[in-house]
Length: 377
Image (tube, rainbow, N blue to C red; front, side, top):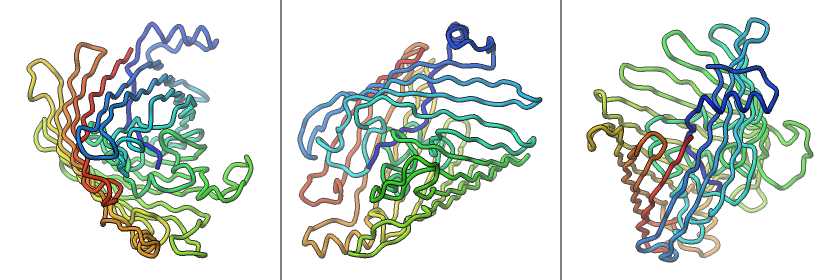
């Protein structure tokens, strides 16, 4: 399962705007352009349980460029981002968990993550096309971005799908997204993503030749809360959990994020997937975040979250037939504290307790400790 990164946008720096414009030969972007550069590092160790009590350093370097410009009386938005990843494999080799305890844990490599152009069609409707991270808008929960566990960025009921994932970190694909925003703060978005349901066939390089993934999400404000509901579907089938059978990958999810006063936010999410095809048939999770409360003069945040991924009936049946014992699913409890240190540095100690890692009774419950360090220009 690919790792997922919650939304992380490095800080902009005005003196870099002019440099990028000069190098690329573009007009001076002024205040409507932003260039960002950042490094995120996780120093992680398994204190007890898991596969082995070892430590690992993982890192993510990101460059991004955002530019708003006028074209034929329309205000267009361009976004480019590239990443370099190293040191991944902590969940696979040390923890043995299913949901991935660090959202920057991914295979080593350098690649373009996003390159898209957004065009307004009306005052409330826009279209976006290009290389697109589905999780930048779909199934994104603001308060969940605090946590390092991948399931709080996008539910594992979605991230488990496709040959290499549903166009999320670290593997994205070409997509088209249409969004209509209402005056009351609601939004309806629809996307078609050029990702394959499986790697059984080679459909070549033609867009959508392998059958797109379709996603629809509706978001609306409700008093002090934001509610999201969504559905998704792969248009081509893939192998089922049952021998010599095929089925479609599809599912749905709902989340609510509610603010209590100025400094307290709580959220919850539930998602389901077709259990005849997908390993995870049900996911439930949630958390609570308190900001600006522990250190005077610091914009620190502390949070506690729970993530539970339950195996689907098809996976349970397949393991039973193979004589492999499994538990019902995996639970992860996470306590984290994010502390800015100056203008460009953030420290985030994080503790996670993984119960029934990978739903494998042979793996002991794991206590994981991570120190995240963020540097941004």
